[in-house]
Length: 165
Image 1: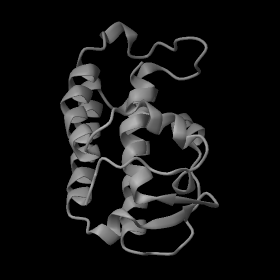
Image 2 (image 1 turned 135 degrees about the horizontal axis):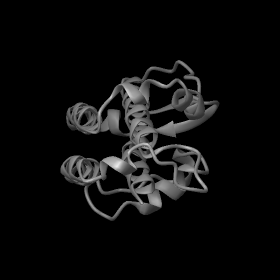
Image 3 (image 1 turned 120 degrees about the vertical axis):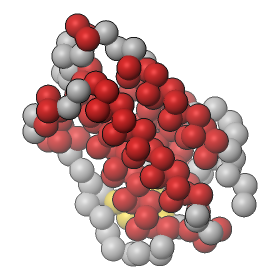
């Protein structure tokens, strides 16, 4: 099983391609694994006085962005679980702005969110590492569009790269 094969155009939503393009070539599980330490280091180095700052033109604070990355990681992992098993249930989309506006971000410290994100990524990596060939090539419908497990794995890496800038 070649884990360095990028998703094809028939495997992902249009906007997913932008995230996938950010990911360097190579085994996607190795990239995801390398990001675990990077995420923890990056989040822990955010100055405390910047944690609740909203940097224009964006509408979210730094803490909300990190919380959003945790939410996305959960959604990607759930979709991978469903699609890798051949589950054909159409999954709904998710409204990231609704999640961000719920206010639960303020209940977590910088350190707690760093640990949460790292734990979610490790759980998703454990899932990816036990997939069979058919699991890796699995596809399903989310938000009314076909997406593959391969795309979701590359999307996890690219989503982080998009937001860390």
